[in-house]
Image 1 (tube, rainbow, N blue to C red):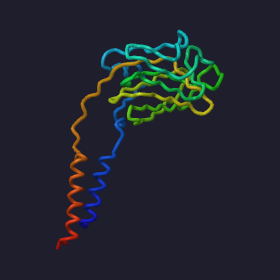
Image 2 (cartoon, rainbow, N blue to C red; image 1 turned 135 degrees about the vertical axis):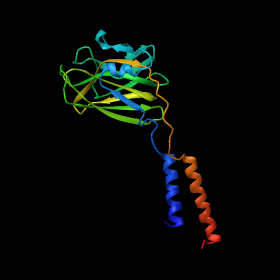
Image 3 (cartoon, rainbow, N blue to C red; image 1 turned 30 degrees about the horizontal axis):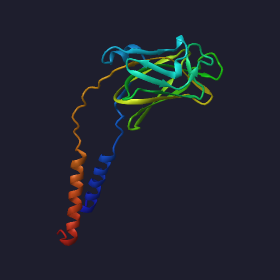
Image 4 (spheres, rainbow, N blue to C red; image 1 turned 120 degrees about the vertical axis):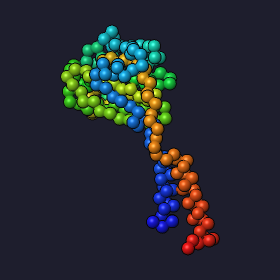
Length: 213
């Protein structure tokens, strides 16, 4: 490989290292049972809200982890549920975000008082830097648990149903999760790659004045 091609290749590596990756990617673990989710937490979880007691005031849920805001209305058809008739529900965490939630979710067709199985709910987690990670939950004939733990604080959880369906939230729990320290990264640091790329750029400039043999 010529000096010019080598210089260009390593410079691209340096740029890629600087622009690589969302901080959210790879930091989230998902769970489909309450016990497995609870076992990953630091301390005990707290039930944030149980909608069987009726709709919450202004959709603001107050607990030991702060105030969560949930879009939606009182149940339109499914008993003891909070529904978002637009087909997209957003759970906004308190200031500082949340590291662990367990949601009980379902979907139904408008004004239909039964759950619609085999519908794919799209669940998007967003952190304070607007980095996102998306997951899918296939609904059942009852509400299903879906939870996560995250090494970065999550600001919003957005649940979207297929067209013509409502999102149903029956209950959710909040908890605290502390991620283990990540292993040492064996890859070269971005600053090292930039130094290499910068050195080759300098070498290429020098070559204009003193061509190499």
